[in-house]
Image 1 (cartoon, rainbow, N blue to C red):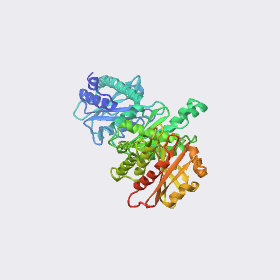
Image 2: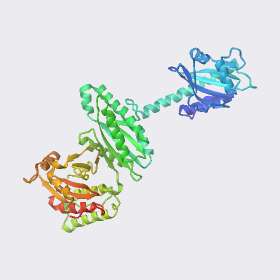
Image 3: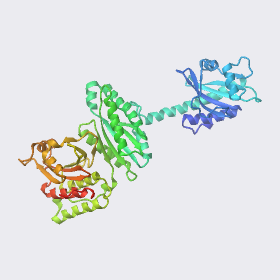
Image 4: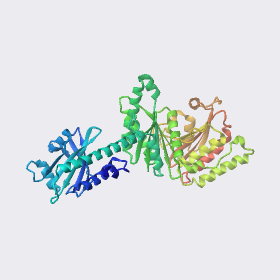
Length: 509
């Protein structure tokens, strides 16, 4: 009973074994005591803990201490017949391997009894004494068998708790940590962290065509790819949140780390025979970002990725400073032109003040978001054309209808266009500054611009270009039936884009 009492407060198997072993060694008056686990497939026992007066080379928690049955037939017999054994080093019938182990450990006698849990041999309790102490005998074996029964009780209880814990924190289908495990990890995560959310694309279609077993196989394939994708990034923790949604939480990670996990996940899935795909949204938080905003931001990026057709990565940085920027009245609410100019003046003050040290992209995003709000535009985009290139690449996009997402950065390889296909845009980009306007109602508008407006279901687009270190940056605002006339915002867009360029490379008209 002393063994059971000693382990009453322990909840893990390691804690149980340590407390029980110490108590058992004391009541048995043994020099040392070890607990080993039976490994059926390997035909051996593996020592989990050694307590007491340890011999040379012994460790309290050994990493690789095992005893094959081929070398230790008494151990195999103990497991098979469930009967104890005891020997002293001077016994003529002592197994040579056993005698050698006792000499190495500087012990003189041994005693081993089986641990039987739920009717199956779980392992062995092995005790030793040193020279000068009484050798173990039948009475000691009977006493240790009673102690082993107590071991069995506390081990069974600990393993039951372990199974309950697994059920509580593990997704039964994929074996990944579940939402509960993720939420607890997120609660304890360090302030600097990045979250990658992903959805399996087309799960309903997979279920409809192949049944739920096919859907389960697809979900397991995502889990099997997510684990190695996370291993490549330090601090990454993978989990299945629900249904077709998975995540990777990267403690101490930056936005690029989350994009790396997502890109690797897509790559691994593409290498499978089925070539499943996922949509991924990545968000980065700082010490001032609460978990709700981080989850919302990652979900926003995920929504953008799915909206673009899936099989891609979008990202967003949670910027508390930007979320607290001043509110600018819509033009329709302004009573005089001076108020509109005042809003532009405040934007310029922000560019020269809080955003002075920010990147070109950060500054242009604020320009786009502010003028979108002022003019009630439906959407916006910030793109880049590198010096000498004909490729226009979206760096950041935003939507203003329904406020579903305000700012998302597409992943590599997404939102790319040939500049030569859009001659009006190309003309402004080549000039290095200026502004253009295209409206569906304008019969003189270029057909390529009109096709893009049709594709986006927009009525107009107004854009302006600025140059930084030889690269052209383009800000475009897309209007619908609720947007004010783009002509009213054209000059302001041109001026604020120019103001957003760092002074070192601003290009005059």
